[in-house]
Length: 262
Image (tube, rainbow, N blue to C red):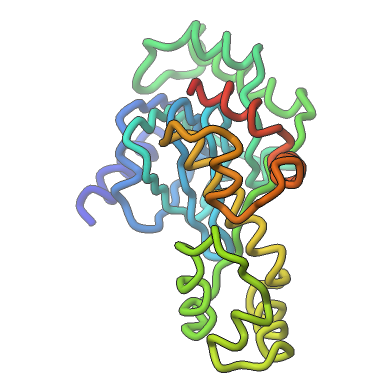
């Protein structure tokens, strides 16, 4: 809690500054919020952002825009996570800047970040660094990039969480709604209703997203080829795996591998 108070104090103590922070503090903290909007860029590994409603997955070479006063908690499970945080003062917000969203880092934004790679700390209005970072922020809404869409809804329903935890490490098996209902002592109808009422998606949709998330981790953290990865997460057809991966991430698995620098 002392670290949490320290972070919020550091971020919010100069309300009018743009702050660049490269120390990876936030992943050690519980859910928190601050008075500045946050641009969190991921350059290595996969970051996980928890909110009250959903878990968001941010792969390498993507960023997430977090509006001001938005409760969140950053986590990760890869050793080479490299992130950059830029906190912006927000007097009023609308449109793009009022919504949490994950987007790929474009070549233009990457070049701007490379130019400012050694910047650290607070920058104030009137300085050219402030104006440069303000331009960087303004660029984000002008690019009209498609959101990265992998986000798992969460629930406090203990029975459903127990079912989900039961198949998280069995993704290479033939997992069906019928088999999971039988193992959990429920009817297919009851389990279907549980997913829809508590998570607002179907069992199949949840399982598909979980498999693609696991595929991203395997691409980043192992030397398995795409056929082996497809098999590890329950696909016998590499084409179906590639199509579902593209549907969820707007990228083919090979494109994701290239972006991840693997």
